[in-house]
Length: 278
Ligand code: C2E
Ligand code: CA
Ligand code: CA
Ligand code: CA
Image (cartoon, rainbow, N blue to C red; front, top):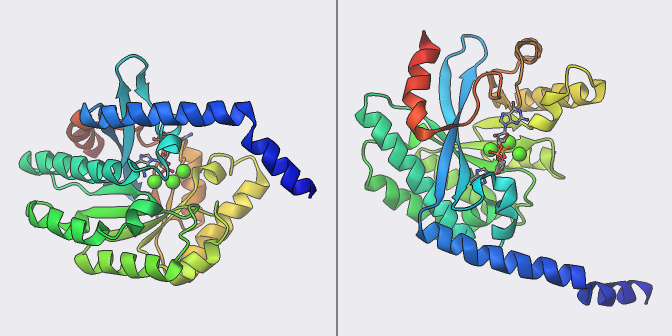
C-alpha cells in the first residue's frame, strides 16, 4: 500500500509533469531540426595501437542548434529515446555517414566508419531490408567498411531476435561492435550470444585506469573476457600515451580517444588522415 501511495504521488508530481512537457517541446523542436537539416556528424579516428594505422572513424551526432550552438548527444538523445523520431534520426545518421564516405571515396580514400545504432532502431522490422536496399543504391561503399556499434547497456530485450538481426547484418557484410562493454547488466551473456566482430571497452573505466586500481581491474577483465571469446578489443577514452602503453601491455589491439584525435567535422577527415600518416 505504501508503494502504491508513492506511485500516485509520482503521477501528480508537478516537477515530473514539467519534465514531460519539456521533453514534448524538445521533440517538436527535434522534428523541425530533422526537417531543416540541423544535425551533423563528427568523426573520431580509431587506430591500431601496434603501428598507429587508422582503421576507421566513429560517426558521432551533433545538433547545430540555430540559437544554442553545437549541442552534444547527451543534450538531446534522451528526449528522442522511444519516440517516433528515433528510427528516422537513425536512418538519417546512416545516410549521412554513407554520403560522407562517398565523398571520401571520390577523393580517393576508402575509409571505414562505425555507426551507433540504437537498440530500438536495430529491432525495427525494416532495419535489415533498409540496409540492404540502401547499399544497393551506393555501390561505391562496401558493407565491410561499415561497423554497426550496438550499445550493450540498452537492454536488448529479445536477445534471440537481436542476435538474428545482427547475424543478418553480418551476412550482408557489415561488421558488428559491442559498445560500452562492461557497463551493462548482462555483459557476459551478450558476449556469449550475440554475433560480434569487435568489443569496445567503455571509456569510463579506461580514463581512470592509470590511477584507480578498481578501474584497471575492470579493464583487465574486459580485455581478458573479450580475448577468451576471440574478439578483438578497442579501448575508448585513450587520452594519453601512458593509456595506450598500458592497454597495449594488456593485449588490447585498437584505441580511440582524445589522445589520438578528437571528433572532427566531416570536412577535416581527409586532411587529418593525410597528416596522421606523415
Ligand atoms: P559512445 O558511443 O560511447 O561514443 C564515445 C563518446 O566518448 C563520444 O561522446 C566521444 O566524443 C567521447 N570521447 C571520445 N574520446 C574521448 C576521450 O578520450 N575522453 C573523453 N572524456 N571522452 C571521449 P559524444 O560524441 O558526446 O557521444 C555520446 C554518446 O551519444 C555516444 O557514446 C553514443 O552512445 C551516443 N551517440 C552519438 N552519436 C550517436 C548516433 O548517431 N546515434 C546514436 N544512436 N547514438 C549516438
Ligand atoms: Ca559508440
Ligand atoms: Ca562507447
Ligand atoms: Ca558511451
